[in-house]
Length: 264
Image 1 (tube, rainbow, N blue to C red):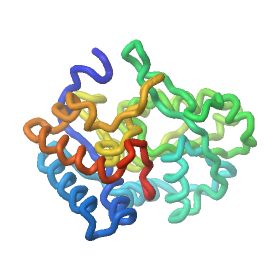
Image 2 (image 1 turned 30 degrees about the vertical axis):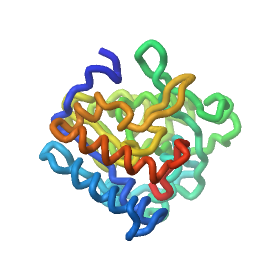
Image 3 (image 1 turned 120 degrees about the vertical axis):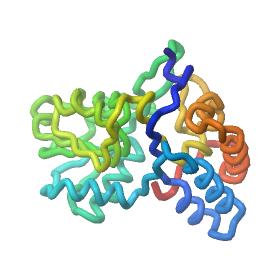
Image 4 (image 1 turned 135 degrees about the vertical axis):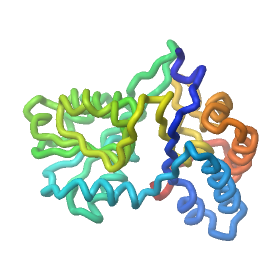
């Protein structure tokens, strides 16, 4: 089955709300964009299968799994991982020295995924420029299949990986054991169940902002531009979700260019 075709309707669907406050900050609480964002979130959560996760509850859950002494170096996986590391450090003090390694997952032409650097600098090249201090933390926002953070961990020298500890805000629990064979992994929230058919995760911003779907050699997409996914995720409400996403996208990305959340 293609990773983006024949999408199952997950029994539990988790949405990280990185949209509402970002739109409020950028456009104002009395703006048409904020009203649309609120309406969209009300529509998508109108299903017992759907749970909306907030940033602070995930950070609090992660910190509650501590405490940890400060790490000599923290690698943030992409912009999202770097932001999470800074947000957790602001409350827990675990990550005083943070470096970003740019990795992202792309759809390839064969119906699968590859992990690439969006900057064009190889992972080996990025890590070569980072002092391999220990103990080291590796931080990502989400561990879904685990292929991105696994590639980062496997690229570390064995002596460094032996003293590393990985963290994320949310994950699918079944993806953790292969990673925990490499180093300890601590999530804020771990959802039980099989990836895709029993449990799935998305960021709310990905519904309306282009970039969550990256494709080799092609422009990025927002989730609403994959209507088959929206129909699987929100059966019975897909048309309303797509319409709201399209209208909100025109306000958030009027030029059609991808934009990143300001406060993930």
